[in-house]
Image (cartoon, rainbow, N blue to C red; front, top):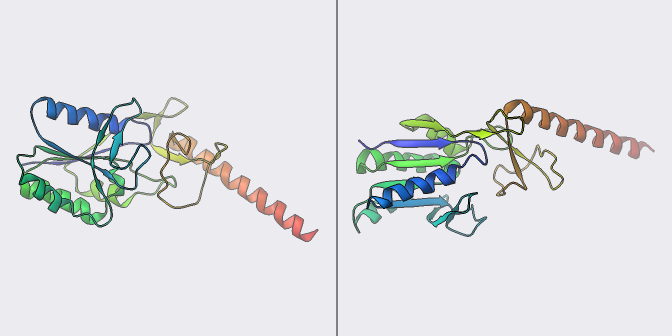
Length: 210
């Protein structure tokens, strides 16, 4: 029976590179694949899966209204399909993860999903949480913190490289907006941001009193 895989990591761990290499391996053996990426993720162009080492590929896109099960079924009408690969899987909804699980269970097509586990505040994305719960196999891809330890967290930074503690969960960006850190240094940078905010609030209060 086909399986649902979830490959997760922090930023800059090479998730898209691994996906594209896997896609190449299938196609090199004459097998058909179907690639997906989030429509919101358009840093390198709409419907493009790109990697930090420069390789890229065109892909189908999904958004909140996409029925992935129906789209995979429609694709199979044109010929055999051997694998579905999904980039930016953290942006999937719970319902879409269930659709992908049914692709494995009922259509017997394996699905390999790649994405972040947590956001810049350390909270699980909906898609990632559901994949962690339902995937047949969960694999962590390793990224490296600036200290040399394994990076597991994603820190959002501003234009001056300072930690950002608040904001929308989804904000597309690369190395200019996110840094992969170990938990220790992630927490330290968030505390620094909190202290910086407290100092600003104190300065504002003093200014008002004057």
